Image 1 (cartoon, rainbow, N blue to C red):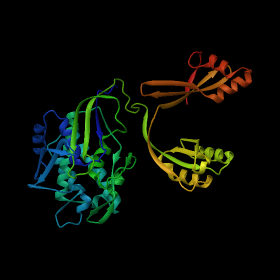
Image 2: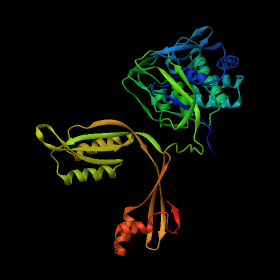
Image 3: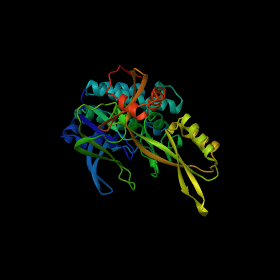
Length: 415
């Protein structure tokens, strides 16, 4: 099925429920009509309004949620567990959502998002989900954010929602339980299996509510695919940073026959580990290269460099995914003479790869196919072509001329 409309969420400054709602509200054709509908949904004591907000010279929208006429300053239920206010259980929140005047689709999405939050709180605090209690005022705020985002997504009706990798922020946050690392334990639990990062910005950028909304609604994470943008929305946060504190949302169309599982090849963040060597033999360096590739490195290479005092040296470079970084680091220190390794975070663009098998009169030949970014490439496996050349007593060039895919009749089998 060809995808027609996409929403892309740019979370370079993390995400909170109110920021996501504000960004999507700017994409809506009638924001005031929508706010009236949200305010009539029946969330107890809640009034949601929107106002212009500027950050670093950029104008967007800030959503304000008031409960009984007061704005809540924090969105995190876990920050309020021990306050001297009344509390709502997970069952209370479920019952509240069921009573709201919203569609069944919005109700189901809101339930699913709240389930992610409750499970994360349960894991963080070591208590069963049915014993989780939320601070009532703060949770009415979160309910408004979650329901508002789900209602907006229903009315905007994108075919697919894609998010950028999420900036979590860094440092520590003060809450009722004490001083916690950023991202907070509940947020970190929700963001498992999602690409996240932090940079030089100190502070909590992604909240549990924002994390749960993104995890439930976004179907893919990465850079923006090729799309024709019709509207851009800026959802502003409350705090001021050197960088514009907003979620930016794009809505538009993408190319026909868009594959939701293969946007434009593969876009991912990988790690480059680099060190300089000047006291190893070529054989030892080659051994280290071979070992790293066997243990999960994506690529390993060496480059000649000039070092201090005119010494000739080798720059030893390795690419790997974050989940094997510690193992690769240990192997570099163990099998090279370096005393220090540099780390660079890289964005890699790669074609999707498949392998098929071709049966020929000379035996099996593996065919490697790569596609994405509007191109498709096909190449025979060198080892198979070399085997045919040796056995037939002809050059590799002649074998390629005869067996270059897909010119000869054959039976192809995907492997």
